[in-house]
Image (cartoon, rainbow, N blue to C red; front, side, top):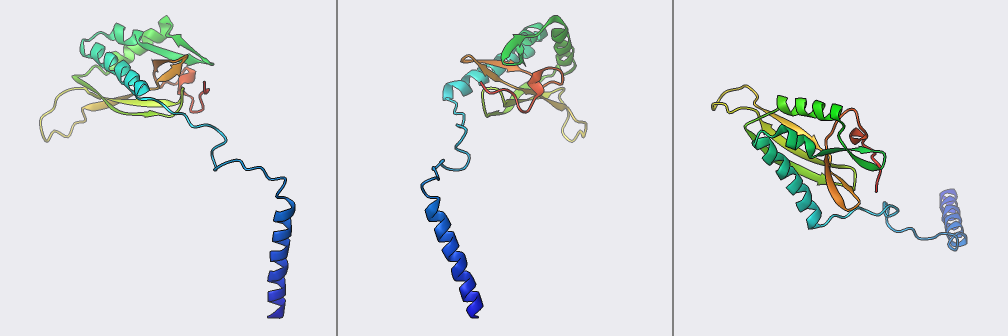
Length: 169
């Protein structure tokens, strides 16, 4: 029993001595995760992204595929670029395949200037109650805030827009 008490006293003494001798060297760093400032977005940011998606939906409702495609950009390095003609054709073909009867924004997550998501649900056709056929699909946008302005980019497999660890501006 004496050995256990002696052992515990030795550990407590070492811990106290170590903490006292290093106290001048330790600099407070704040709470965990405080090293990197969190992104904060204003109400105006949310409204601007919602307005972009609403404009896109309005063009799709009007069957203006070209106008909808012209709203899209992509992230290249640390710049926002318009779609080149090949990318425009690819996006137009994709949008023609998902022309629907109803488009609605389902959700939005703003994390940083470059890593954001907006989900748009697309009802492809009306169906009767009880009909088990699926009639919906979804489209994901990756809004990017670049030099104080929001741009719609799409979640694709060709450009840097797909990257989960996109550059932070």
